[in-house]
Length: 184
Image (cartoon, rainbow, N blue to C red; front, side, top):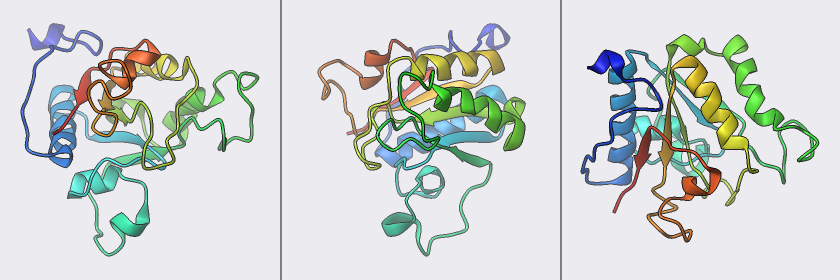
């Protein structure tokens, strides 16, 4: 029945792990095993942990990554939707969510979408400056993922269950990630 499962109807299961970084590493392993694809796409200024794979996904060099290279491969980074400091020097809503459509450009220039297992994101970026992306951003990202058979992984470790007022921060964006990462 695995061949009948597609991103968007990925089976809902719970896996217990010891730490946030271990949860991130397991989500990446699950995505790679399920899709049979090696690449993971992540965002600039993201924090996903301090183990080897999690460090590869973490953006900040200091204080986290300095002195710990080499890192796990097939990790690609794109700008996050930061309306306060837009990577594209645009203003919301006139930009028409250019930051989301920029993923399509990354698939032309940086990594073939057919080799991407998952996009991992923090619904509310914490370590990178407590950034809330604009409404509609994650729906666009999810649509791009569905178009290419890419899983969407919500790293909800820092936002925590119900810390934002809803069970998960990704609930605010009207999306249903394929994997949700939580931790103690």
